[in-house]
Structure formats: structure tokens, C-alpha cells
Image (cartoon, rainbow, N blue to C red; front, side):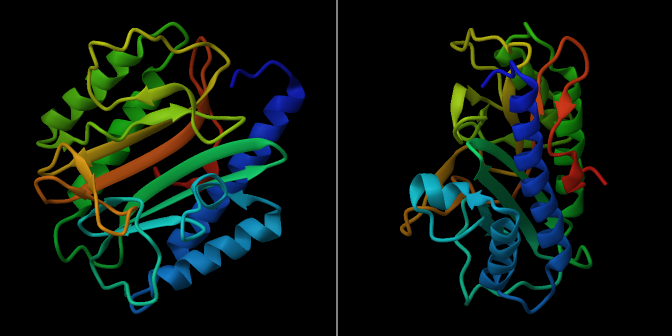
Amino acid sequence: MSITTEAEMAGMKQISEAVASTLKAMREYCQVGMSTMEVDEFGGKILHEMGAKSAPKLTYGFPGWTCISVNNEVAHGIPTEDKILREGDLINIDVSAEMGGFWSDNGGSFVLGEDLHGHLKLVEASKSILRKAVYSIRGGMRIADLGALIESQAKKSGYKVIKNLTGHGIGRSLHEEPREIANYRDGFNFQRFKKNSVVAIETFISTNSTIANTQEDGWTLIGNKGGYVAQHEHTIVITDGQPIILTALNGIWN
């Protein structure tokens, strides 16, 4: 969507603060021995208390309030009772929701407790790349140029990018134009970022894989060449200068 009124900006700020604070609370709530369903129920309760509706459940009938992916799961992990969190796990939580006709999306990967398996370097690379990407965006910039920046930064850090998962426009629904904000230079994408538009920018930084494949459960995504992936995401408003980061409350850069 494109922000044209103060009421639209207020609506986007309200839902963005809801998903951002929920993501932060869920990350802080996670403990060794908990199930991902327990964490999801905690997040779902927060959204409900704020008057927000889970976007994946509302839009796709996803079997959870949020997506929680653990270790080799790239994205869209289903919260379950038998998926138990362990020390050193690489965890990704993605929270998106609707409130009052406005939609927002954010996510972040982190290591639970001590970094027993050396995932922290990947997580920090993803955070850094998202920061550089977000602060490079201006109205009029080619979307493909942002993808080139993300991929080049990933390569500098010794990583790859997932090419079939992308950022996207957002605001009046979960996925809007531009439909694909890729993590690599897509030479066939001639679209440009537009001033005052709302987009969800997300990194998918990978150790081995470049494609995420859907598993038998119909939701969970796993890399085509194994390894691990870190994702970080903010919903922003594009300007002529620095963007407005609507989901800043999530603290994913802290």
C-alpha cells in the first residue's frame, strides 16, 4: 500500500507495534525444554489481547498463530507439542498480523542460550545485511539493485541467499505489490521502490542452500542442499531519505 493519510500511517504504526512487541516477547519467553507450540500459544495470546489477528492463519489457514522454524527449517515451521527447544538451537520466529484492516510482518532468527553449534555468526551476518539493505532503500531505487546488495554482502560474509523466498509489499493485505523483493539481482524485475509505499524487507542468509523446498506437511521449508538459514525482517515505509521502520520495537538488531 501507499501511505496517503495520517489515519493510514496511524493504522500501520498500530499493527506494526503489535507484531513487533509480540515477536520480542516470544523471543524473550523461549526457554530450553519448551515446545514450539507453547511459545506459539504465548504469542497468539498476546496478539489476541491486542486485538490483532494472525495473518498466516487468516490468509492461508496455517496451523499456528506464528511460524516457528528450528535449526534446519528455513521458514514456515509449524508449532507442535513434540518439537522441544534445546540449548544452542537456531530458532526463527515470524509474526505477522492484521488489525483494523492493516497488516504488518516481522521476523528474526536467534540462538537459544549458549552458541553450542556456531550459529551466531550466521545470525549476526543476517542482522547486519538487513540493516544495510533497509537503510539503502530510497524511492526510485530498483528492487533488483537491493537484491544485488543483499547477495553481495552475503558472499562477503561467506554465505549464500535463498532465492525463492522474498520480501514483499504489505499494508492492506499480507502480500501486495511489489510481490517479490528478492535477495539477489533479478534481472527480469524492472520495478522500483515507490516513496510512501509500505514493504516488508527480509533476508534469507544461508550456509549451503539456495532454494527452500516444501516438505510433506505442506508448510515447512527445508534447504535444497541442507545447512542453516537466518532470517530477519522489518516492515518499513519508504521515503526520499531514511525509511520509517514501523517494526522497530522488535529489537532484532539489539
